[in-house]
Length: 212
Image (cartoon, rainbow, N blue to C red; front, side, top):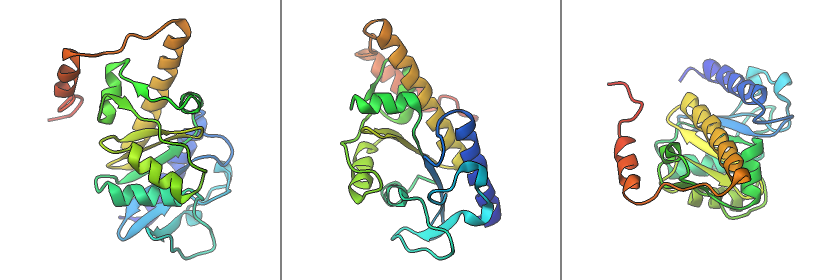
């Protein structure tokens, strides 16, 4: 890992989320896995003021060195890296439609085949837990079992990927689907995909969208 490149990539990813309205002010946080730990965005610094040297290198036990404190949600990232070896990057954000659905404390059901791209027949909503708490980290890991993203009750969403690009793609995709689902609900009752179609979708997703 080139640490300087990764520091810059975290800032670029944060700017991308802000520009698309997924976060505002100092909300949300992003990390990438590194040997023995992770590199994570700092707490309480607006995107416009972020500099590469402010990205915090830390261990998964919470220890860190330097002048800048890590995101207050560092433990949620750390527990995801511990629980899911395939996770190379984690994105936590507060996009409007994910937040709205999380406040209903409902999962995102299989109203559209792309929901299956997160690993199952829905995107779960976690149990409620206080922000920046150990309990939030625990309920997030539970909701992510066999999934690559989840909603966080009355809070927002979190997603991981093999790399930062994939984690960002999943974040944007989840917000898009949440918006479409709530739009469909505003017009009526969405018809969910069920029965034999579930197996067909699972089979198609084994190699869907992948280069040979």
